Image (cartoon, rainbow, N blue to C red; front, side, top):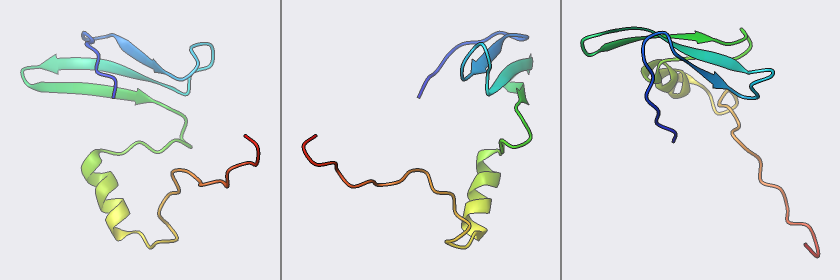
Length: 77
């Protein structure tokens, strides 16, 4: 996990800087609240943790995302 400090108005670029996947901007900081803006293509889903957990809890096994694949080891390598 990467933890960084940003001030209001500053951004974090996600992916290749020349063609980023998206940008996260700190919009406002008021007391213990931080407003964050996410600028990603509509094809990229962005959810609050509690919403993501609910989506996974209600999903059938076929609907759950595949995070990775296990591939057989290659011979001689």
